[in-house]
Length: 89
Ligand code: SF4
Ligand code: SF4
Image (cartoon, rainbow, N blue to C red; front, side):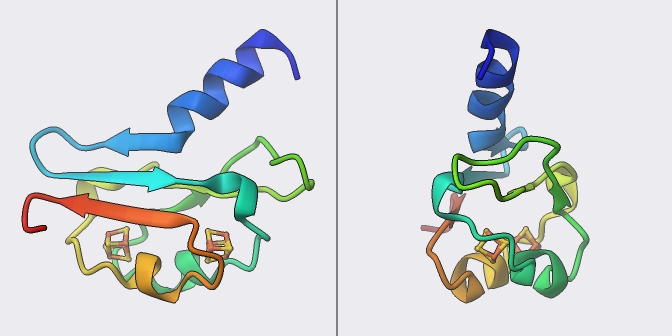
């Protein structure tokens, strides 16, 4: 993994919309099942171009500004990859 890829992965791990919601991904545990992508009612997630060390392309919340904090992605991910952190917690 080169330095640029390392920086990209670090940036992808924590994505935050200003004053709203933060999504933290432990993407090394992701197995690319895409449940999070399909259950999100707002189309927040896209797949990363990067892969984790097991070869899976994990999701990134690239449209986090659309998030309505329903937490379906967090609840339904079978591998506990996603944490949705809101001011309501
Ligand atoms: S639901 Fe979890 S394991 Fe499946 S693609 Fe999303 S983050 Fe990865
Ligand atoms: S909390 Fe809801 S709206 Fe936000 S990314 Fe997860 S599924 Fe999508």
